[in-house]
Length: 280
Image (spheres, helix red, strand yellow):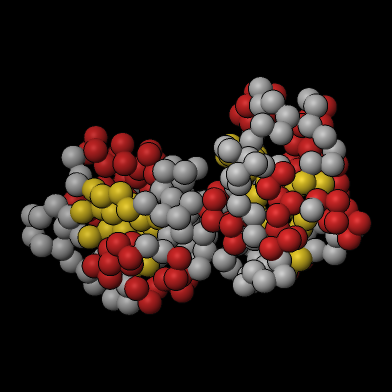
């Protein structure tokens, strides 16, 4: 089977004859190149080949100027490299003696299929390392001025993927109303259904809610409102297509209070100011 590449991405990066290379699964953080960890940047500097995701900042190329970079991103409803093919690429190039970095948005083990890649490498006998990254599930709300926990408001938080209703529905149905901050990644397209489901199960329609899009990227944008209005939130064209999440819970009410002095790249939506005042 031919590699899904134009030419060989390692044509000018031969490894030592007969040597087995190394794979490093690196968390790139939420988007901005300066939010990667120090160890992650070091591993990029040592790399011969970088296989990177759609959400990993192109600005990170500065950390690996001599490496070959190959895009292997997966985005919803778009053609992409199958996971099993990607696993084989990692194994193939490591066996050629190369230092391979698999650069993944956020943290490799948080909705990133890093576990699948690690298992494939372990089963193939290929040495590998995990470099944790700043998880977008926590970083994006923080950058938008939303602490996922706060004394007196939320002592816990729950992160779910909103990509498939069959996956998230049993979890949401079993979550007592207001008992935790709810973070839904990959749930923008189903925000109306998620809001309706929560309200139907006892959550107040006035529960503070937010849409956070494109954290730590030039497309950053946030909407602050209530659970009842969440389904009607409109994402501007400038931020459409950027990754985003929903944040639901009392802690969202802190974002408006923090906004005056918070250094942030987020652009705010034109939400109903009376609704925003009710959140404080």
